[in-house]
Amino acid sequence: MAIFKGAGVAIATPMKENLEVNYDKLDEMLEEQIAGGTDAIVICGTTGESATMTEEEHAATIRFAIERVNHRIPVIAGTGSNCTRTAIQLSKEAQEDGADGLLLVTPYYNKATQNGLIAHYTAICNEVNIPAILYNVPSRTGCGLQPQTVATLVKDVENIVGIKEASGNISTVAQIMHLCDGNVDLYSGNDDQVVPLLALGGIGVISVLSNVAPAYVHDMCYKFFSGDIAGSRKMQLDALPLVNALFCEVNPIPVKAALNMMGKEVGTLRAPLTEMEDAHKEVLKKAMMDLGIL
Image (cartoon, rainbow, N blue to C red; front, side):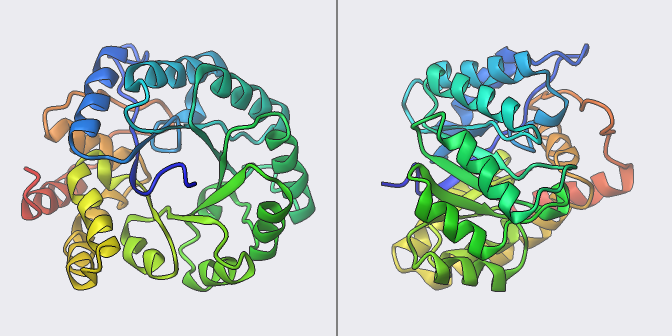
């Protein structure tokens, strides 16, 4: 059984003025996501600024989300690392704290070989028994999962159940689904390709857009599942200007700006990320207004 179906939010991490994690604000954001129909919380992913968290902060933020959500919807912990030992430690802690699943990004900077990726993921998943989702985002990590590697891992490692595909390459996604014979839970990692990946057998998205439009992304998925392909496609296309604005600067710069425009007061970003440029803010604001978010 899949960890979740539909729209999982890659939730941003709110910060105080001193750049500590703002847990009170995170509590509010979690409640708003659940009320908005989000199907799963993905905590401490790329959008959550996990790369600039200490291991202690990382574990504490995951634990907080699990406790506050309290089994109402699944919580998936981003526990990937470019260090296999660190990924194992974070994954074991997340399992002990009650995570429903793990999101494991490919090792960044090291740029492992395909054999290295197989060894890396196998080592992590042999230390836990909750389901894991591979995360393929070579534009950020410099390291991509090849379709045959995905198929090998899904076949040989029992608790590797899915993949968040953010390569942007539809042909790669199709080849993954072909080699896995559909026996993998496919999630879009790109908000502009949700419907195309659903058409290839996907079961949902791990979404940045859901931070600002949780009901919209949930409904787009479930229109597709219910057979209203035209309706789902229209929602996908209507959202493109906002999706483009949310990625006109590196994620999560725009989405935190968007949340602050909405009055969510999620704070600023940790260096080396900086505030969004004013010209881009105007484009983002207009896109949000056009979709009825502002």
